[in-house]
Length: 211
Image 1 (tube, rainbow, N blue to C red):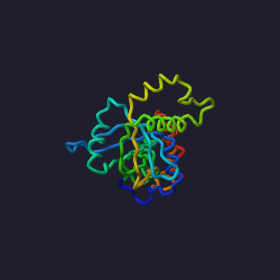
Image 2: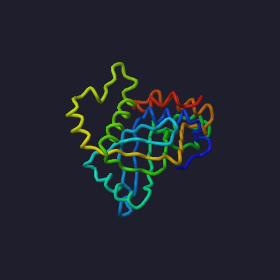
Image 3: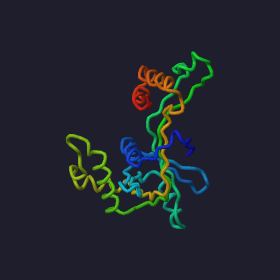
Image 4: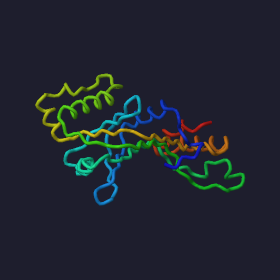
């Protein structure tokens, strides 16, 4: 990932929080014919940053590509976690009125996790993974749902329809492109423009612009 120094995010807690808030990643591997294959998956990233846990539908052929490839060695993968993103109009910049030398851009935040991925087609491993994923995504709710809330026979049947995915993380890259390279006046204009935008994603980003 291309990360200019003013967009780089180095704080581990901040990176983990972005992944936690998004809660899902596009997991990308290379298929047997060299074509990239991607699946969006709910994920849980371990606190020490070394492991990402997920699951994939058994009907999805992506996992079979991974399973076949892992017989010959490690399978490299990229997990892309995409945060807020929005179009930035040059009309929001104070510099537009000063000299007019401004162009549109796109602000966004993202985390790229690079490592090796393994498929687990083992009922107990998958059950544990689903339990941990559920706990992660339900933890902030007033009445969190648990896997044990559903009938055991039903859960067992549902588990047969998925496989587990485990990614060992070797490289972590994080980027927050939030107009940091613009002047204070331009950033204030961006924050105001985003706050007044009709797109709720843009309005949500307004508070992230450094002022």
